[in-house]
Image 1 (tube, rainbow, N blue to C red):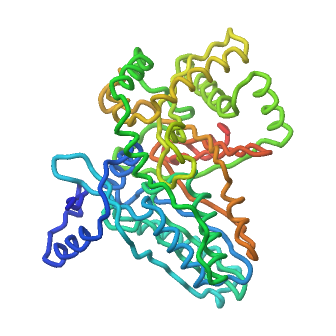
Image 2: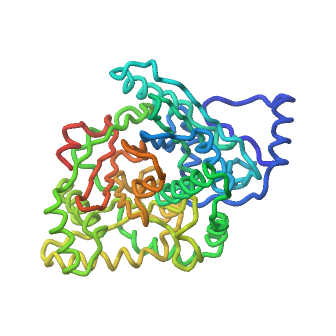
Image 3: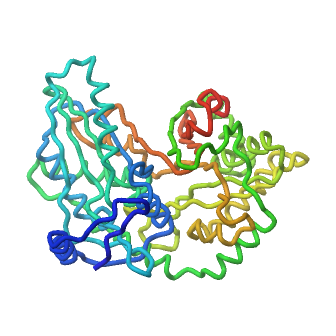
Length: 443
């Protein structure tokens, strides 16, 4: 049985007879045990050692208007959780060995239902904000499944606030609309009293098996070559400084969007140069880093989808496939923009073959000193096959609105680009490192 992980600096548990019995019961429910994927390793570490401020607790909220069958809605979610191994997984430390993830045969998903119909409309937002803060503060123990819970708050006879809280260890942004589509199908079937006609899902552990077959020596050679000579991280623009070592990050968000006309011009430029919008965004952030740092050899992090083309059915799998990798870019002012961007895209394509490599391992192969981060800014280009808003439209007879996802990262600055007719941009930043007005300046 995998051991219960103990966070550093406290919360060391004394194993009681009750806990031993519970652990034996948990072991009997385990279907299979597997290694962690690269991104899971990093998230698990952060969840374990900063349980009081776990940045990887995610909340998806929306307003549901219409005649909601709450019982059918719950059955639909329970059915989808039962379908996917990723949603029935816990994470464990093993003495002297690498951590593992355990898939459970079944889990009981916690639901909270509250009636807020007597709460004055003008007080609901404050009450919801307080509910979300308390819910996030509860966090999750990675070793105690399920790492997902739901809340349905009734606002009036035809309106509910829905909150889906989960740990990022389980799934990525690509997976969210896949899950919502299945819930919609299961909800319609439950209301009609029939089984949902859904294909048998491919388990996330097929991807974990794919990872184990990759050539680590080739990855090491690629990253050592690409990072050779890079000795210190690119400074954060307008950085206030690291501050006190024991000060927890305080994340805030600034959002903006490019006008549709400007977005259309960027799309036209990308087609003319034969590059992707992601390349444009990565290049723009590199230019900004170069401008503020004064250097032409800059490096930032990039989140990749991580779904290998040679793994059958990977586009429909639910789980955590993303990874964070370094992107080193040489800013070359003497080159025409098109030539420079095409060269940048060629480098990004070369990276694809090794994008599955754990960041901690990449860092160990770099020339940056021990204990020094390889980069402090991250760029995320959200390119999903189905937008969450489109998936929610599948709930027949219901209107889904006010969709929000609360997410953070463990980096001081993260730029998120959301493609569409008007390119959306948001900057998630640590208030201790970047002043709000400076975050607005960067956007």
